[in-house]
Length: 93
Image (cartoon, rainbow, N blue to C red; front, side, top):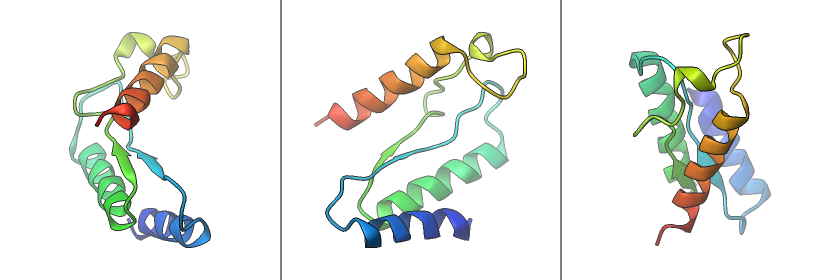
């Protein structure tokens, strides 16, 4: 997970005054240990650089019906759900 930390540390160094928004992983399936680990890594890296963290798994944003036939990408409904979660998180007090 060092790569995740490096991305946010480099971003903060390059843009010291920027408002950084870190969006965690999503999954249409079960939130297993791998997904939780990735989510925690993004959250920790975000906190280390004073970024706003957005969870897509707590509560889950993506449902199986939002996933395209390739089983790797979300459809328009999934993109809207993600955008709504990000917007609601960054506009929260």
